[in-house]
Image (tube, rainbow, N blue to C red; front, side, top):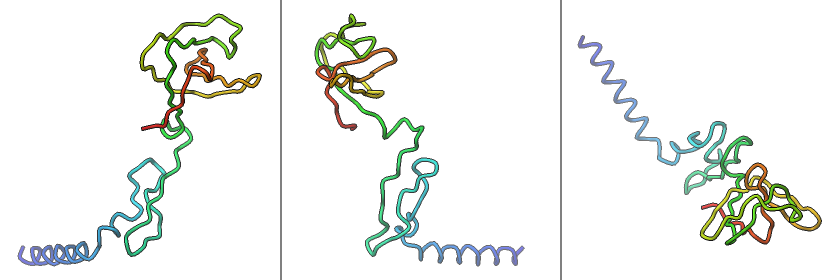
Length: 131
């Protein structure tokens, strides 16, 4: 039993010496804590620490590829990208924010799809940066 305790104590001391030698920047270098397959820092480091880079958004990710916008007061929502059809609804007034699925140009006008079958004309929407 004494022999086992001696070996365990030696291993603990060696591990403590090893971990005390590793600086925090070396320990943080290239950790994989963000998204699966993304790296939080570059493999290179400087005297000040590792060089961090922004990871690319994963193609099927919900984050990073979104466009957020604010609708104008009393904006009309159309079932297709054309003012020649009656609107599906009017949003009323207030601070109304939407997520844009995609946009397209038709006859020199830009239309934004906010939901399936719901389009907003470029005059009634203001793009905003993500917070």
